[in-house]
Length: 348
Image (tube, rainbow, N blue to C red):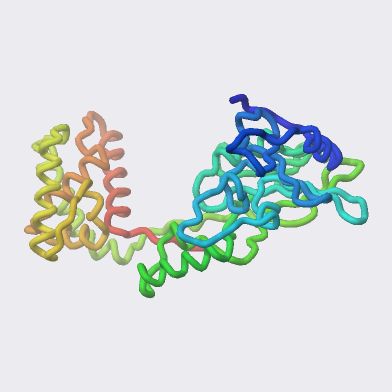
């Protein structure tokens, strides 16, 4: 299956390509009107006619695709052409006044959308470009209106179809019961997120029309100094104890790590009455438990916390110089801040 590219400049070119592309035949494709945009083996990458004045270039497996569907959870959802026009990565339109626009959309959801990025890179119209930030992990549409390129942020979508939204709300009502909404569900919205970018074709090239969101500014992280100051005597004591005990810990022995995990499972069962299968010590070593352990030298899970510290900070790294000692102390300090939940995000 070859990765193909298109370089449409006008709405008419899209229409011509659609009309010249024969629908796929065969029992699996019957009555589906699948017209691949390039390699016919990659049939999920196709041109979809919404109406005479609107065509979508679809990469498949997104909300709105009624042939190559994505996972709708348990929702009773049937995609429509209107949904296709909303969720497809590239949508060409010809308006009553004769103007032509193209709308580009990122993937939906906070995760990586590699196939969407690749599709946009290969099929953005002539004069527009797609780029994924090498450093900031964000995606942009570039417009050649002089030098240098204008770069417009292409945010990820948050809108889901209403049936999907309703199903998510039902699940949340059952699972959270008013508690914190899980991050992997909390991003979803039923209203138009407004993130798609629309450009109008002019004699001079492409002109930005509407859509998009500002580039998000990540919250700054601050150490909760007041809380840390109260814990500091215990932190110093734990570090001194760790310095003595760490060289004796067989960190490369899988059986030793397994023994620590099994001891933790037994302790959880004794203290809570719950049987759990701990696949990693970190799995249950949250900030609350870590603070409880570090403030109690006799805590039965103290060795488990020590193991976590040595593993995450490379505490046994040979220290031949003062600089090496500073590096280990810095790593330990970062681990303490994270493990004890001493970092808060501050939006500015």
